[in-house]
Image 1 (tube, rainbow, N blue to C red):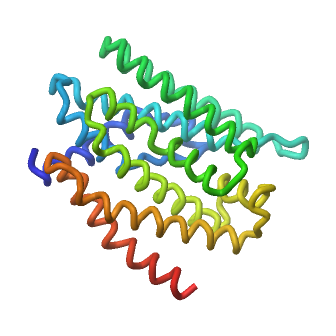
Image 2: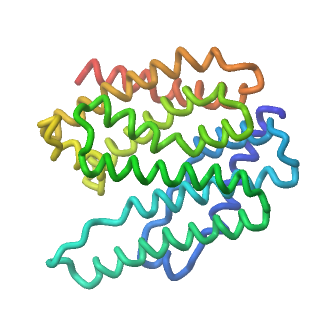
Image 3: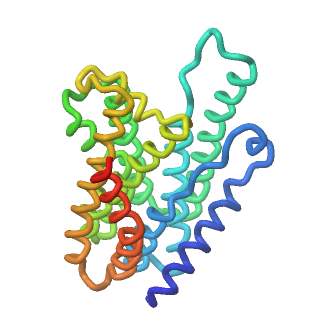
Amino acid sequence: MILEDNDIQVKEIKASIEHQIRHPYLAKFIQNPVISEDKIMFLTTLVTQSDIPREKQKQYIITTMLVQIALDTHERVSISSASDSNEIEKKRQLTVLAGDYFSGLYYLVLSKLEDIPMIQTLASAIKEINELKMKIYNQDFATFAEVMEALKKVESLLIQRVASFIQRTNVNEVAGDWLLAMRLSQEQRKYQTREVAPFMELLNSSTFLKANGVQSLRMIESHIIKQLEKVSASIIELPYNFAPIQRYIQEQLHQTFHFKQQALEEG
């Protein structure tokens, strides 16, 4: 596949997903789900190298992304409080329903594919991701490193399971490190702009870290740099058929890595 074609395909798949998940009523009350182009890029590069029939490849990618969107949407559900207004409670309930709606779309698409092994692959990943999330938010980990490893799995497990399913696991390490760095960057940005950043809030209240907001931000920033350094070293080891991922990440690294490294040194 020509590299430029891969970029175009990512945009087309993202547009298809946006069309499928569009729901006028839900859009009035909850924010649109974030659709990760990073994850679409990984999936597109993986699936187009597989034995999956060409006419079904797009649906496999969309199905996996619908699972990701459903998981992400359920994660945005806030904890209820007796002092919450009716509007807040309504938004919370609609967010739950939105996650269920996206899950339903995933099952609908999968039923059309009639691929039982793929269904089992994704179902197993969903179960493990939800178990890891429960452990993270229940603070079942004793160290910062253990939490980071669990969050890495949460962010990359769907990609890695698909890679294993089609026997293209070369990309798993890069996917894990890169997607963790992107999740931490997202949490950092939301916390700094006073948006809901559940993972940052968890770190601030954790018994093992005992850090305030500023200290947590510094630890997150340092870990982002560490992950990006690992990606920068391992990306060049990927086989040539992963060239679309190599180029995509190298472009992102050029834009973000030096900026973040400079910010860390100045901070």
